[in-house]
Image 1 (cartoon, rainbow, N blue to C red):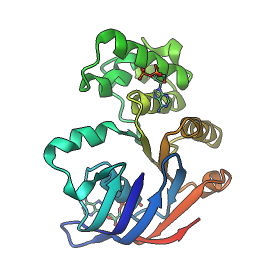
Image 2 (image 1 turned 135 degrees about the horizontal axis):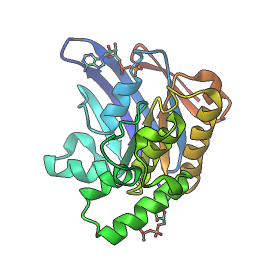
Image 3 (image 1 turned 45 degrees about the horizontal axis):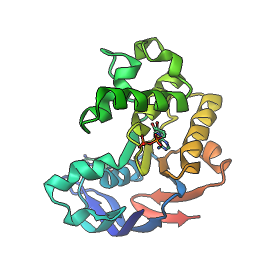
Image 4 (image 1 turned 135 degrees about the vertical axis):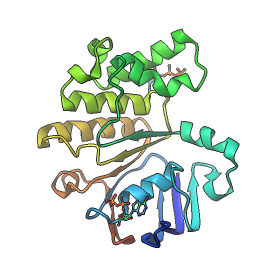
Length: 219
Ligand code: ADP
Ligand code: ADP
């Protein structure tokens, strides 16, 4: 589902954020991406979601070979990917419901269909009773669950997360990870960047380790 072949990424400033990285994550797999701050985790995720282009190598997500994508293919690919950010990037000028509905607005669903999907997503993260609230009024764990509902509302094949538990205490972090496992069990391919080794080593999933832009361990 996600394949990197000899991928390197050099930013304009001349810094190699990724060096000759190769791996394959199969459909339905769940894996963690770990390494110290600056190791290249965010860069790798940005390449998968087309926020950055590789300097060298090939990247494939699903059937799409990213290097060969035209501009018109990019929105299509983004629709097959859901992304969860550390600071959840919720909009505080609208309700929980409207935040979760955002990815659907560009897909052209009818209001009824969109509402059904938003409520299904909120139900999956246990926040159905919060739909009318402003996300500002929620706890940080709940805010992150809204971020996850927004990431899965369009039923992506691939779910990416960048330090999704970065601001949460250990118990809430474990709950968030169990949510990701729940989506993985129904077939979503999941890749989570996290430097929280004690949490992720307790979870028995594949772990890809980056060090200074190189993939130094995979198992
Ligand atoms: P991580 O997510 O593991 O902390 P990043 O992928 O954010 O690592 O960063 C890897 C390296 O690339 C770091 O040294 C960082 O400073 C550098 N970097 C990240 N983004 C940019 C950018 N837009 N321009 C230049 N250098 C960057
Ligand atoms: P559709 O609406 O495409 O006909 P279903 O009604 O069978 O599909 O969908 C079941 C529910 O699962 C939907 O309401 C949907 O919102 C929800 N769902 C959302 N994201 C995911 C996901 N990543 N994996 C599984 N189910 C999801």
